[in-house]
Length: 325
Image (cartoon, rainbow, N blue to C red; front, side, top):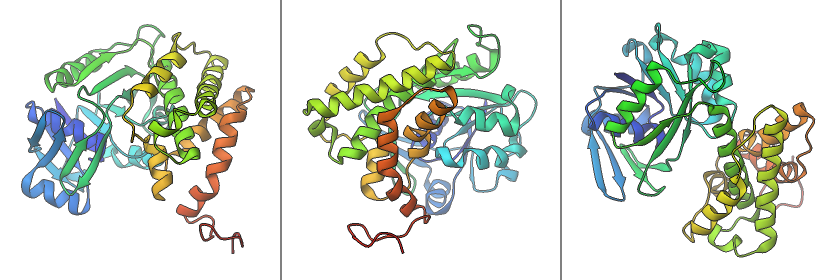
């Protein structure tokens, strides 16, 4: 397969490196010093089992140089998905699949609005990787990377396809645990329940998971956030598998003491975050469905001023009593 990775950051670069090392024809679209190092020396991934060094067939920042791709993995942040969908048009041909890898439930629809729903394979990624330097990625999310994929369109319960199965085979060769889900929307909402709860609570309390999970009130908030997501999904016609909240609580209990969800990490470090696409999306989609989401609303409203500050939409000094100027 000819696989293009648009956005060779943490997750995109990680999957691209694994696929390239397994012999797939991989093109990485990146930029800046990260791109320069990949072009000169390939891409290096630090994993719990050792370092992986992969050389892509091509690394570039010019989509027009790539040509047609069988699969395009979108490794950008959620807020960049619509622009990315427009940018990858030169690589799309008949049968090309565009795979969304973002947390949240809106990226597949964003791509569908630009390229058509028949182009979209939605993905739920169980990979936590970060760029730690130019041309270097560190896998920090456990030993076994995993991915769940599924066609966006088709008769519910019958959403496998030849191209999804081919991608599944390629990922398995790359030592990524993968499955094709018959109803990918339910998986997307299940992941959102976990992400909004873990990320939202972590961002509000501003301490690592190992600390706040010892506080019953914080754990109660975690459960309330997840239950609100489940209620919104149900109102939209999706029934999530039973035991989602219990699984989330067990996951939290097993996380390393110093763990922070990416949303919490971005908020604490003063970076742009995916707040709008996690807790913000729960609030927004809940209103559309007529479902109250008071805890998600509280988290979203509490974090929004700092998010707007980072994005240049609101100006104030952190800790200042004077407010905006």
